[in-house]
Length: 112
Image 1 (spheres, rainbow, N blue to C red):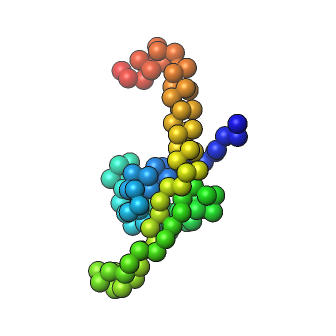
Image 2: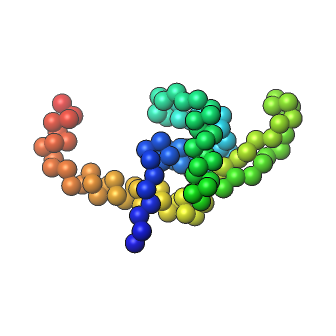
C-alpha cells in the first residue's frame, strides 16, 4: 500500500478544511487555524497550501456566490476529496500506532 505523506502544515490545513465541511476558504481556514492551534499565519501561506493540496488531489474547490460584504467578490470554497479523507484516516492510524509504541514511562515523564 502506498502511503500518503503530507507536511505538518499541509496536514493541519487539510484537517481545517475537513472541519469546516465545505465552508472553508482562505480566511475561514486561517481563522480556524488560529482558533484551534494558536498559530497565526498569513492568508497567502494558507492560500498557497490550499492550492497545493488541490493540485495533489486532496481537496477540490468551487467558486461560491458573491457577497456585498466582500464587494461582490466570490469565495473559492474548498472541500476534502475521497483521497484527502483517506489520507487523513491513514495519518490518524499511523499516529495512533506510533503513540501506542511509546513506553508508558516516557509518556508519564512528559506529563509531570
